[in-house]
Every structure is written in structure tokens, then in C-alpha cells.
Image 1: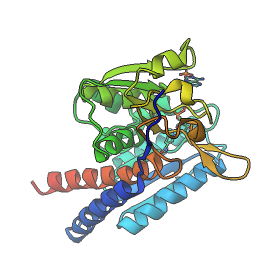
Image 2 (image 1 turned 180 degrees about the horizontal axis):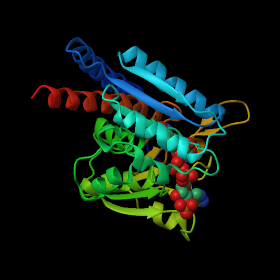
Image 3 (image 1 turned 180 degrees about the vertical axis):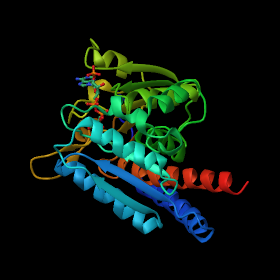
Image 4 (image 1 turned 30 degrees about the horizontal axis):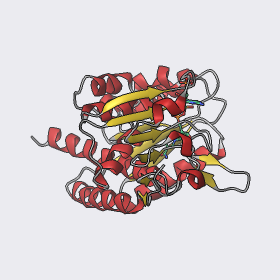
Length: 290
Ligand code: NAP
């Protein structure tokens, strides 16, 4: 295999650009009487989830978006969560709603997300949003999947006619990322836990998106020298660091580009949630003032 230089496909600069745009739009909306507001519904005491929610709230505050954390506690039942989502959906002052995972064992986000008004579904969780996405109709894509595409575009990676492989088929990342790649005329292969020979399907990929949640899953044997690899995975290490699904040491120098973890998909995801919220608020404002 030819050794190549691997470009670091950083996400922090793109995230800053998106936040700058969102902050300007938020200031304008606030001045015209529609202050953008995001609500995050939490029903867990999971520490990494709490860290993520705090990072959304901090980024929202810095962008001029009010972020309300609706903490229902880890013992709440699905009906209480559904009721909270319905109340927020009916509240004209709320423009974005996120249902944070994990949820209590008897609650499932797939079941509950249909209680989120699709117009406020800034993380694309409602099956209606996902269906519209699959049909090529306007809808908010899940922010992480949208971040994958935004990063590819930001770094000038062409997609039309290219071979893309997505490892992972979750509703929040793998499937919508595959849909978005398909919309951009890539030829898409999706892999999952039952895929027989993963390397056989990842090696031909010119664009490889990995969203599994298993540190070190992707090594040099899984990649081609011209591949661009987007590592969505976030895996905490025993010493408190965060690593992706790609074994960076094994792959470095053997692919054309690789997103870092942290600092790749993560910051773009958070920034896009804010951008989706101001877009939703702008739509509300336009409807109120035709
Ligand atoms: P998930 O719901 O657990 O889905 C994982 C997917 O990986 C499933 O489709 C599973 O297949 C597949 N998989 C598991 N083991 C595999 C293997 N050995 N080979 C091939 N596929 C395998 O996880 P998720 O919510 O999509 O998240 C994936 C990762 O992305 C996690 O590390 C998560 O923390 C991270 N994440 C990051 C961000 C961000 O902003 N950076 C946002 C969301 C998620 P089956 O369907 O067959 O079980």
C-alpha cells in the first residue's frame, strides 16, 4: 500500500463559522421579537449525557439562544416524557426540541419522538422527519448526520459518483448519514453488526463514515490510501480521554483524510443544532409576519 499524507479534517473552524452565522441570525430574531429558544428533555443521570447537554447549553448561551433543560429525572415513565414533548411542541415560544438519550429502560426515543412537532424537530428524531429525509423532502436531518455532510463539504470532498461506505445503521447517525450521501449521488453501502467481512466492504470506499461506538474498530486493513474517513464514534477511555472508532495510529499516513476525535464531528453537531434552532425560529417569525 502506498503511504500518503493524511489531512486532519478538523471540525472546530467549521463549527465556529456555523455558530457565527447562528449568532447573527439569533440577534436579528431577538431584536425583532422572536428570541430563539431550544429545549432539551433529559431523563437520565448518565454523566456523559449530562456533559453533552451542558455543552449544548453553553454553546447556545454564547450564541444568544435561550436553552432550557427540562430534567425529568432518571425514574420517569414514557408517558411523562411524551407529555413534556407535547407541552413543548405546543409552546409557541419554543423553536427547537431535543430528546436526549439514553432514556429509562421502558422508554424508547423511536416511540417517543413522534410527540415532537416536526417543525421544531431540530435533531431530526421524529419518524416523520426521517421519512421526509428518505423521500428527499425538506426536513431537519439529525444534527450528527448533517455534521458528517457539512464536514465533507467544508473540506471540499466531492461525493457525486463516489463510493461511500457507512459503518453503523442507527436511526440517529448511520441511516440518515447514508440517506444524505445518497441524496448527493454517492453510491452507498451500509454495514452493521451482522456484516460478514467488514474490511471487504470498507476497503473500496472513497468516503468512509464510521458510527459504531467501538474504539479501534477501523484499522489499516479497512481503508484505501485515497479514502476520506469521517469518525463519528466517541468512546471514553479509562483515563478520561475520548477516542473515536478509528485506530488513528494504525490509519494515519494510510488515508487521504481523517476527522479527529475530539474536534471533528462533535463540535459541528452542536453548532448545527443551534443553526437548526434559528432556522426554525426564522420560519416561525416569517409565519407570524407574512
Ligand atoms: P448505536 O445506536 O449503538 O449504533 C451503533 C451501530 O453500529 C449499529 O447499527 C450496530 O449494528 C453497528 N455495529 C456495532 N458493532 C459493529 C461491528 N462490529 N461492525 C459493524 N457495525 C457494528 O450508536 P449511535 O447512536 O449510532 O452512535 C455511534 C457512535 O457515534 C457512538 O460512539 C456515539 O457516542 C457516537 N456519536 C457521536 C456524536 C457526535 O456528535 N460526535 C453524536 C451521536 C453519536 P446493528 O444495527 O446491527 O446493531
